[in-house]
Length: 128
Image (cartoon, rainbow, N blue to C red; front, side, top):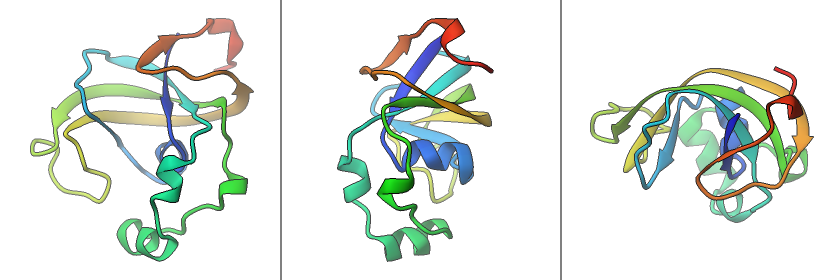
């Protein structure tokens, strides 16, 4: 199965907070199921101020300690890839490319080492 490593809190937001795009510097031709891997990096998390997160997204920034890291945490469907200008508005849109996501589904976390770009993991590793 194909998977993508995503920093926290973004992996959490995709599965639990209605984030329906993954902002990337490159487009993708991938369509269909994609496992969400929550990376161990804290870089994206530390870039956010809790009060600003609340104002922008309308929900509280989860505590770092409560976020799963270094594991497959869910699955989404990639249904499109558009430029930020084509994606319309919304708080989650940053671009330059927006991978449009649908049908997020959390799974029981499965420890796994992430990688750059889309990568393949054994299908039997995750119960879907």
